[in-house]
Image (tube, rainbow, N blue to C red; front, side, top):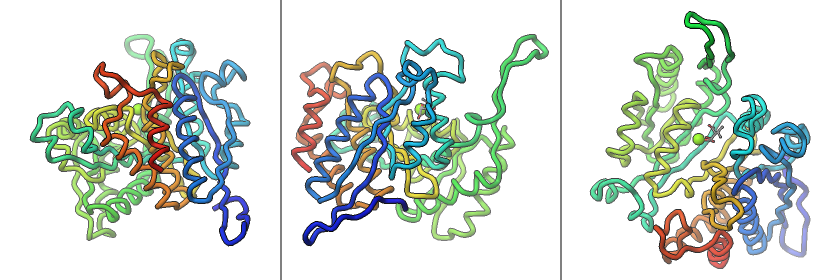
Length: 369
Ligand code: IPM
Ligand code: MG
C-alpha cells in the first residue's frame, strides 16, 4: 500500500493519509464536508493525520473544464491513499449527450481505478425500525445484508450504440461478462460470506441470459473452494420480491453491475432512508473509492438539509477497508448509532417534525467520537 511517511512524534506514531475529495454536485459538497469534519475529529482523537485534496467531478467539472472527469482528477485519485466522493449530476446537465453527462464521470473513475468490487451494506438500525415500510413482523426479524455488486463490467460497460434496425432507428447496450470478471467478484463475495454468517446468495437471470448462465456456473465452481459457505442461486425478479417479503433470509448477496444497482436502492429503502447507505468500491489494492449510494438530490442542494450519514458511514468504511483502522471506523459507526438512538433525525427521517440540519447532525456525531 502507498501510505505516506509515518512521522514519529514523541512516543506516538502519527500516520498520514492522503484523501482525494470528489465533492461533485447538488448535496455532494455538504455531505462530503460533514464526513471530512468527522474524519478530522477521528484523526484528532486517535492521532492520525488526514490530508484532503479536492478535485472536480461531474457537473461542476463540465462547467469548469468542459468534461465530467478531467485528467487531473483521475491522476489525483490514483496518487491519493483513498478517495471520498459525494454525488454527481443535476437537472442543469440532464440534457447533455450520454458521453459527457456527469454520471459518465462515475463510470470513468470506477474504470480508471479498476474498482470492480462495490460493497453496499444495508442494515436495519434498531433506532430506525419505525421507518421501515415493511410489516411489523418482518421488521421485528431485522436484517443486515451485504450486497457485493460487480462494478466495472456488464451492461454499463458493454458495447453500445445507435443503428438502423428492423423497425428503423434503434439503440442498444450489451451485457458481457468474462470468466475473469465473474471469478474475481464471486471470490470477493465468498470471502465476505466467510467472515460473516457464511451464507451467500448469487442473483442472476439464468433462465434468460447467457451471461447469467456463465455467472451461475462459475459460482458453483468456486463454491467448491468454500465448502464452509452455503450458497444459493436466486433469479433477480424473485430476489426483488424476497427483499421485501423476507429480507432476513439474506446475508451476503453477489450480483452483476446493473442488478446490484437496482437491488441496492430497494435494500436502502427498507432500511428507512436512502440517506443511510454507504458504499465502498474496491480493487486489489487498498486504494478505494467511498461514496453514499444516493444521488445528488438537487431539490435540497445548498439548504443544509441533506442527511450526511451515508457519506459519514462511507468514511468509516474507508478507515476499515483502505487504512485498516478498525477501532477508528467503529468509533464512527457507534457515534452514528448513538445519535440515532438519541432520536436525532435529519428531514428525510423526521416526517415533517422538527429536524436537524446537515451540520447539526454532524456536530452530534462528532460529539460522540
Ligand atoms: C449508483 C448510481 C450510479 C450507478 C449512476 C449515478 C451512474 O446509481 O452508484 O448506484 O448506476 O452505478
Ligand atoms: Mg444506483
